[in-house]
Image (cartoon, rainbow, N blue to C red; front, side, top):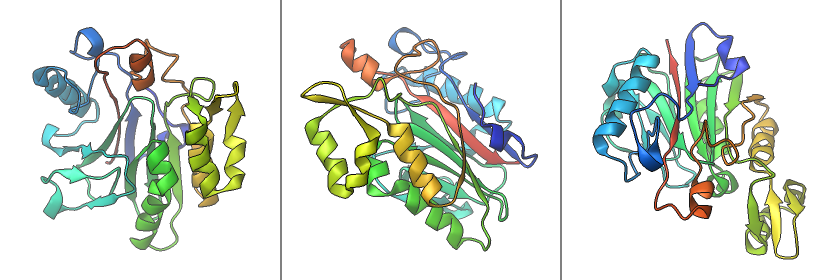
Length: 250
């Protein structure tokens, strides 16, 4: 279990970037697989989510998960949609007794807290969502809910810049958005570049005047602590587990 130093300072807040340790799943999913979209046994996933709920001291039906699609859609969780299925890649809430969660396996989990207005949020920032504005959309939505926002963000474990190999077509998508995006890429060979996803999402947050800190772990390289989509793909495994990151107001 990993924590943001910034978010840890606030008494009215509870959060955690969970590793893959301490779970009930076996085989490919060994540990704390919280991905309902995986092919893991449903009963094991439920046991894992129960473990997370207990650690977050929350009722299991108050742990809110998203159906993530690499979009730029943000949903505010209120009493009227609390029990509905959430299709988005970010959530925010003012509700107490509710925990928001994001599952990842190389993408960036971001947990956010507006100290002034007591709003929490979680963001699933893969390259698609980050490029299409998921971070900006989340911050705008938080700022619409209250004045004088003072927002902190914990950027969680994700694939590291030395591990994220991409092709020229991928590179061109980012250069099309802005030539300034060149700085997030390092040449590996004629066909491949290395992409700094953490750097890219961090700058998106900093451009919005967010106070940022990191759990700087590479999910691809650290197989003891994290699941990795890319590692599983390279090993030609049929599926992969997902780690969960959670935040709530106390």
